[in-house]
Length: 143
Image (tube, rainbow, N blue to C red; front, top):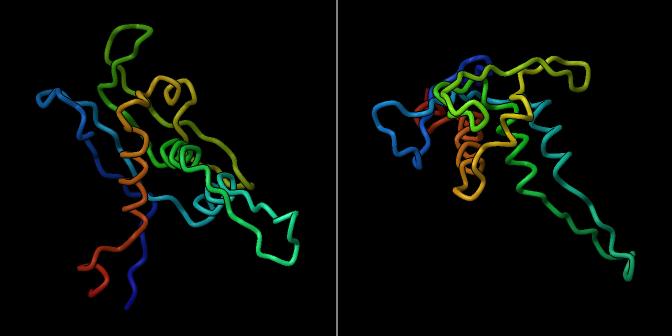
């Protein structure tokens, strides 16, 4: 019997790069529904026809950075103990409602995404963790 993915459940994730073991930043992450995942995949992909040889297959260009950013935007539902560079104090960030394709989704505000460190691959790390939640583990597959 197949087991469904519960898209409203979240889990707490602490980045591997967070050095504060006593009081780390906590990301509450959850799975993406298939409609939102399709929107993200389609928004970050481009089919490019071969204009020199139209009889040949088109190529696919993936914008991995955009895909990761959108995955984090919609997969992180809350951030606790995040150091705000403007106030120089820890804050808690809640996702806000956003409409896509007629459905309401929770999304991190852009002003939070703008200040996430990019040099340390935090966005890639979070996106990878979120994508894991969209898959069943080997143990879950067997049940």
